[in-house]
Image 1 (cartoon, rainbow, N blue to C red):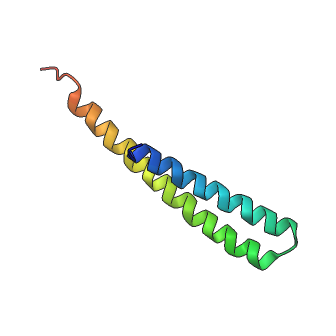
Image 2: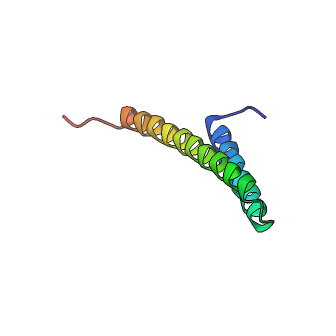
Length: 72
């Protein structure tokens, strides 16, 4: 299956979610140092996923704008 910008962004969101789950699990085992490191990774991945999604939305908005009929 070809990789699309949407599937790439979705995969980034899944990586962020997994990192959040790992951080929660570490916290639940009272491994606070590991939980802190995993939380930082989760935050970084969440920001990356958000940026990808925002970029896609901006590109698609531009395409829609270009395709819209002009009124004169």
